[in-house]
Amino acid sequence: MQLTAYHWYNHTFYNIYMSQSVKTQGKLSSFFDVLVQSLKGNEVDLTSISIKRAIILLAIPMMLEMAMESVFALVDLYFVGHLENSSHAIQTVGLTESVLTIIYSLAIGLSMAATAVVSRRIGEKNPEAASKAGMQTIVIAVALNILISIAGLIYARDILLLMGASTETADHGTAFVRIMMGGSIIIVLLFLINGIFRGAGNAAIAMRSLWIANIANIILCPIFINGFGPVPAFGLTGAAIATTIGRGLGVTYQIYNLFNGKNALKIRISYFIPAFDQIKAIIKIAAPAIFQFVIASCSWVFLAELVATTGGDEGSAGYQTALRLMMFFLLPAWGLSNAAATLVGQNLGAGHIDRAEKSVFQTMKYILVFMAIVSVIFLTCGHLFAAFFTSDEKVIEIASRALKILSIGFVIYGMGMVLTSAFNGAGDTWTPTKINIFAFWLFQIPLAYFLAKYLEMGPTGVFIAIPTAEIGIAIAAFILFKKGKWKKTMV
Image (cartoon, rainbow, N blue to C red; front, side, top):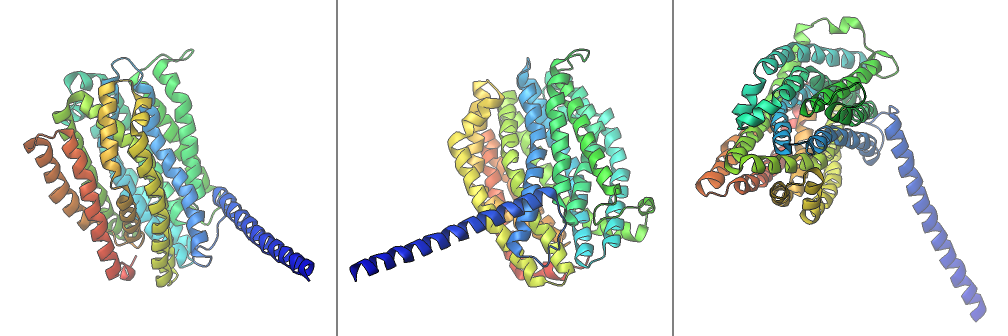
């Protein structure tokens, strides 16, 4: 009898163990299947599969795409940080990036409009209308960017001086700014066309275009900066040449995929003929989205200028180093939040309003975990990251301090990012715009100025103002999201 009970116990334990093992292997196998599918970019109906699967299919390539976007500035920062007079070079790269954020705002605003309209039409099962809408946003982008490029070419040195750079730094960086601003149409197209592909649910193409651009930039940066064979050493200017060529190759890949006829979007030349009714509808969504990010960008520009005037060249270099490191981790989180934008747009188009809302909260769970991990990394290892980009002890100390203060609010940043993306994906671009006006211009800027100037905290006061404002944005966005006005937005 005891032997029988013993065998029964072992048999039962073995069955339970095998059952759990099979389930674990099944989950791992399923995850890797989804991972491979997300990287390949196979098109699926995101409105009918499970929400978790849809998020992973979109989020993995979107996170990798955004990580690649942040690599541009980090690669430039690394190579120019090892040049002679590196503080001037680092400051030039950082201040130029701050100015370029205004161009990024244009690009991101248009890409959000494209994602909202394209995803809504795809959800309605109307890929032809989605294709037409996507091409009209390109027409708008090219028209707007011509003036920006001309202004950048003419006023490059004045821009650096206006940003608080010293005369010596401005002399070093004028050519760099001219190339980056002059080639800004490439930046806009890279963002915009990726927004079109994301709206169509094919985030893998967007990801691969950034891979191509970054690999080219990593190879070309040391060649053009330090010289190689017949290529002379251009120094700081070489970083701008390499980055512009790299991004240009990424755009070339995007254009190839737009016209190869292998995707849901089937592009014809006739779609580029201006359709003013459609352009008007796109601008109605894009204008507040652009303004939304211009508000944030102008705030960042003001903060960069405030740090430069209160902290000098070293304070500015430390702040810019911290920002580049922060964006390296925040951009993947933004990529994850973009999954919510696509899912909200497509599900609203398909009439699945409850599913759109559930997608947002499921995405939020993932991003909160990711941002918590990033916070721990920066709180414990921020100085090591900063030391990788410069050997200047003062710059490292300021960058490390900035990272510790900024990372305190990372978890809240993540929640705000997802909710903002959800509004934009629904086409309700005015709600986050109004939040940004209050949080950045009426709160963050006055607080930063008060702390930095009146309390004489210098750059540290600016660092404190940033997470404080972001927490307010997240709280306001959550309250307005729960009210549900976004569900009724017509696109």
